[in-house]
Image 1 (cartoon, rainbow, N blue to C red):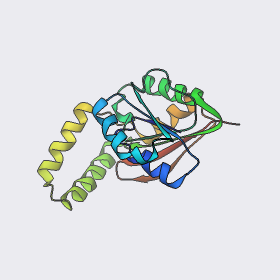
Image 2: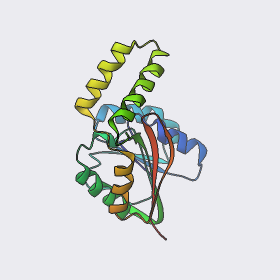
Image 3: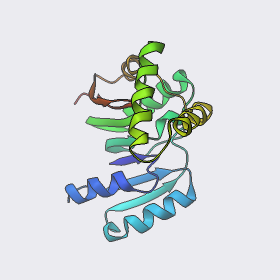
Length: 181
């Protein structure tokens, strides 16, 4: 399995704990994040490797590719579609790509309601509404959230044989692309 933008290795740890025959490559551009992943995944040292590089360059072959809260850093839909194509091409026949990330709706009013809901959830953790709105403004400067339909369309355009959204809540969605056997 390839973990794109694997960060601290949290997703890889969950996979390695549940799938004892799985090996994982954690790919991230940030050396500090990879150091944290190395610490977290030390107990799996024979089943995990690390690559320090951007996910926008060549990718190693894998039976499965996963990503969690990383691909919203790709701001251009054409570049993201090309990345999805490279992910598809790196997968073994029958391989799967799972991506947990932010996805918005195409309707500004509905997006406002979603962000209102997220602000309430943040309030449950002691973050005021004003502070939540400042976070949203900051995220808008560095991240790019495409609509769920655009994300699924990009997966289709990248050549995935089957695409689906398996789960969605507020701003988060788990999308899947399957490469045919």
